[in-house]
Image (cartoon, one colour):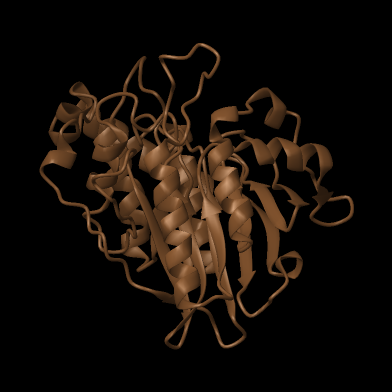
Length: 339
């Protein structure tokens, strides 16, 4: 009830602000257009290392597919409040937003800039580190994925980076260390938006230069510590998600497996990315959004967990990475965190 009252007050305040004119009303009139923002902001390439606790545990709170429009609809405000509350409750080492923060914005009211600003301020106010990887909707209108990344990178606690010569909005990694030693690394890859040139591939796919970047990045981590493990965060699936759904083991007995949507939305052109991960022998987790399940779905297949986080207006996933484990089967715990 308290959350409902807080959301209702925020909604009424925002409604009055828009109806009375002013900066928010002006911004909504232009749909919060941030087009060209990436041309004015240089996204940092160096990110700080993060550290596991004394037991070697590192916690990630993952949300995906909020599909915000204005940031001031009752639905938007309710989801924002829930994300804020869960972040405060669980105090994760890192929050990850794995794509489609923004709806496509083709119809009705829209305010891209206000949505991004409001999301960022939740984590800034909480002194909470957070990361982001683009979804297929984020760069569709009123600013590209590159613009979104550049806009978010202004915020101190937002850990995003970009290799400007590589396709997509961003590719980067965050290292988890035990003292000076890298024990685990989180790798973030933009799976692109839509493939408008190929009617057989509705969704985009990771391009050759991105695959090469990923291969080189993993090699660099292994050169520093041959026993390092990698967790990968992206928005859309690779073909091995379908194989894991068909042939993999459930994370735990009676735990929700990957759903049939893995076959429906299979993206064969992402096979080169799977090849890099399989050849590395050190990728313990591939974690995505996009499919909008109502609970965590997870399968273990060929030494890797394939995980889909719920749609963010329903739940998120609390992932605990046991960085001192040398067996990927025991390296992760997954928990649905319901609002």
